[in-house]
Image 1 (cartoon, rainbow, N blue to C red):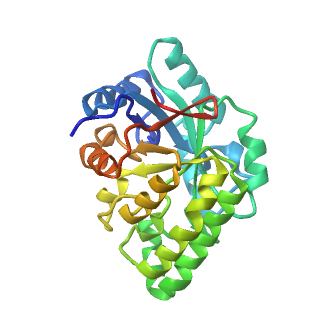
Image 2 (cartoon, one colour):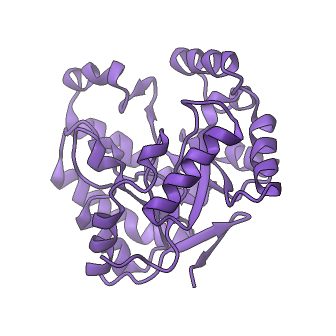
Length: 278
């Protein structure tokens, strides 16, 4: 395996530790070991009080209380920390992961415009009150129809693509996380959404996190990645790390897959602008 000249990891969460330079340094050290040359931190927006108008339910409210107790509940403090890290010479980009809901696209755009993010990731995690990728809500899968859940998920993802409030689409087929597969429905949506993603100008993250989940498959599925490559959709590589040791996890295999599909360079993002890496 030969690395790309620029290797991104934009989907990284520090939430299991403090916003401290010592904790950040552990992520930076692992990034260097893994060959990651362009690292970004992208905390979950729902943890910050400033996003209550975009998403609020009992689970989110609990997480906001936990974040506040840990000193993580203030968005400006998070941004100031990363800005100070850069002033101290740490090579890190400032990102955020937004929970997209079909009704909040315009409000999300307005929210993001207020802050100096390098990039925003948009992810669908909620179908109404169903957090379909949460372990504590996993039993709801057995109470519903997998076909219907897939259709609802991909319909929400389609709306995200049409609204395009963010720069990167996060783990695009994360609906498969627990292994409840529906290949025919999924393939139909892959074909439908690929040209829409290309037209949107957003990038898709190739996320190695799926290999660490029950589904044991990269996000998006290799079949969909092939379609995206053929359509010329911008791609970034991410690990969705929630701890330092997962930064760059699975990158050897992911880069081998991308190279086999003819990918020679990834895209990077800075100040909300995507560009093809040199």
